Image (cartoon, rainbow, N blue to C red; front, side, top):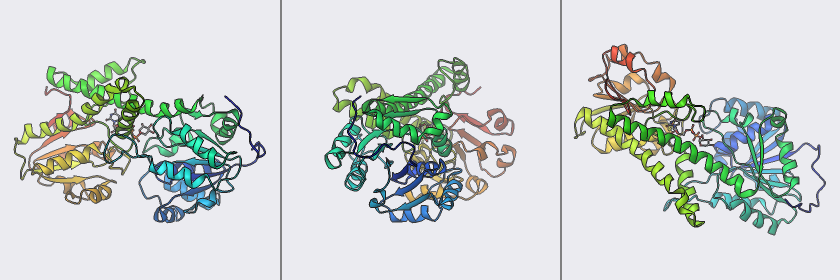
Length: 450
Ligand code: UDX
């Protein structure tokens, strides 16, 4: 690693001031968490509505614990929000937390927001300050942005610090990460990041120092591995269906091997959300640009297995109600891409609902938090406030997002509301014996009918 000549005095024990660019899921959580660590934090976003909402103590999405934390930090006076980039001028560290969604016409990540954030920061930040990328980006981005930054602001620096937070656990994952990865080109950048994360370091959080490209790759490699694990068990589910086995027992048995581990082996309708699907696609696109397409060909299959799980659940519906679904009344429990979230981006539950509705069925959906987001995205779908209203007169019920309240349903009571007591568990999360003994016909992905 080489040293960068800085004009500014060393940050040393000075209290750092932090700016967070982009106040979506990642940025809003990061800003509130940095403030709770004791730093003065300015959250900056180009969307005035988002800024007004955050400044008033409201988060524009559902994340357990975050709104309370935001309100507490606003009250402390350490946390503020603005649309004005020049507010970052006297900050020492600038975290880029903007989105990198999939481009409309291909697999790659859209870098518009990351580029715009860097361009807005570069001319206004003070000499010696450190820009830290947290967004998930194609490998090579950090080096490119660093060059761009130094061309405008030669005595600043850029590092990369990927974020691994999960929706539903965002605050805890940010405050107590299972590792911290920093991509740096010199020891001063590492020193500053050590100061930002001093509390985590004191708590022995593993600290991995990498070069810029490796730090970018860590994130997409981790998400590719998780996606692979889920698609692996969903492929096993297909085999179990063909061979008369039970994927839930298989997953439990292989999961006892510590080399495999039991987490992320929940077979069902597969992965969705704002990260896993787009990250594996962007990774494939980037590998192709790098001339290493073949190395990630397997991710194409991971994507296909994942999307096939959605079709397989629709096949199960047709197996019960017949090929022609027109006019069939189907109730769907769950719209979010996973429980404890109101996020419906690339939600398998919502995709399946849309496909069944397009096949002519009358679909009614319930979700404790995601109905309003889902309704905005698909106004043709019908939503109900309560589970009872959702399933009233249903010819079949689909369980597609494993919220706790669905596991707590009493099947002996619910059976009185439906027309046909048929439950298809798309998440392998309900107690099959309980539902069967209450009189339901119970089907699930990857489980033979014994
Ligand atoms: C993921 C990564 O876990 C996180 O580290 C990264 O920072 C962002 O992407 P998230 O999108 O919040 O986090 O969701 P995650 O909990 O990983 O679940 C992703 C999807 O996989 C969900 O749709 C979930 O339902 C599905 N899933 C998960 C399964 O189908 N089976 C499993 O066993 C686990």
